[in-house]
Amino acid sequence: MSRFAWLEPRPEGLFVRPGGFFLDPLRAVARAVISHGHGDHARPGHGEAIATPETCAILEARYGREAFGRLRPLPLETPIELGEVSLWFAPAGHVLGSAQIVLEHRGTRVVWSGDYKRRADPTCAPFRLVPCDLWITEATFGLPVFRHPPAEGEIAELLRAREANPERAIVVGAYGLGKAQRLIALLRRAGYDRPIFLHGALLPLCALYERLGVRLEPLLPATTTERGRIRRELAGEIVLAPPSALADRWIRRLPDPLLAFASGWMRIKQRAKRRGVELPLVISDHADWDELLATCGEVGAEEIWITHGREEALIHVLSRRGIRARPLALSGYEEETD
Image 1: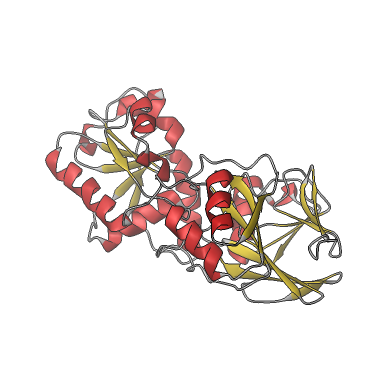
Image 2: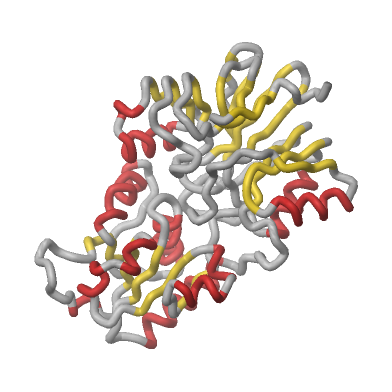
């Protein structure tokens, strides 16, 4: 019997039998340990949800406190005992509050990566490498084509586009949790101090980031309640919006919008073309191909399980390097939230 047999895939997600809890379950359960606040990892309805304090605040903002029987904040690097399992969080570098879930049971250490990235991000704690016996990793960008350029260079492209198009609103599609706030912070680091305008759907989480100590201001709403009026004063300004808004009537209220999109998927030109994106920005909150391979080697695990993404190529390369790897069939995690 495998020394990891105490981890049991179920329809709800991965069950940690000696601890009596699930990791990022896909359905409501009695006790969930949640790696971060994205909806494919953090579902409402759990009897108890254990997450970092920042993720608990995000869950409450997104779903309301009544969506969970109990939200239990657990700071990073703070072990607790759940049944026969010692549990603690290590930073994952994905979004604010994101964590790797570290499990220790009878001399064996297992790390559930959640979603993670290895690049610096001014809005969240950096990824910490945790050596382990079993590494359970995502593989969202698990193909050699996905090699992310430095984010600073993509931000420079965005600012050049703004300078070259003073008569147009520069509208950047960005996911509401993590990506939007990281873009704002990167723009500030690049010296851009003008107000950044936000679609209304992005305002609450940006305000929460501010309350949690991440400086983003000045931020302003992109549109007013006066429907139909084009806001010509937004010519030459940067506007952030959720991806769905790029194809919505909302965008008609902006002057001659130049569409940009910030995502690791913008490496694929056909995806950008299909969305009508003029300025694809390859800025990802996930590890790229090289970083996935490097991390799989650096953790020193005797076995690697791959939860979602492009696992076939990663398993092939790891096997050639003498590392035992296999897919962990858990359906329900999305790949489009990057």
